[in-house]
Length: 169
Image 1: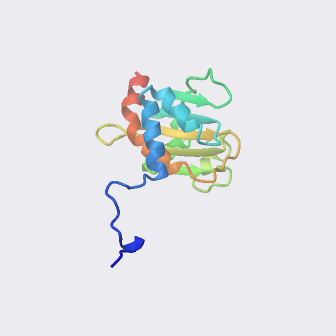
Image 2: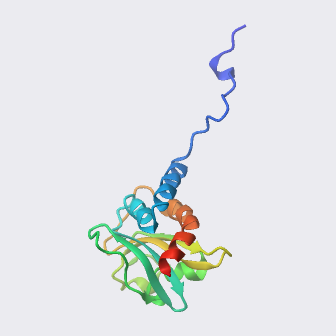
Image 3: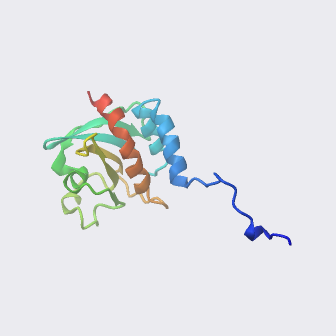
């Protein structure tokens, strides 16, 4: 009796890693070289011009690190009042968000006059689970990727607290 291919047992440990798992492993490798290296990796995956880490500080949003696709000399962004940033949503709800066009996104009526048009962000929690800051992509132009970067940002944000808090001090 011969056993057809469909009846053969699958060899052990041949699990195929998901694209997200592969990308997250690559991000983690870059992160070993520092926060900026990790942000450069993330920025290379998105059409957004900027990728940054921001820390929540009472009513302010403090820039920890920023990558500008058009200007490699940029290391940090400007600190802004939290109420004037998409990151306020992350701070208030803890929910990650992707908005290709804030002018028409009803979730952000206060952002309709903002110079930032496209935003994708996830919360960075500290070691105790408190909301420490945000990892985000943003742009002054409308950006829409074929595949949302949100799952990658959420996964990357979970790894960032140690590197981000070291850079913030």
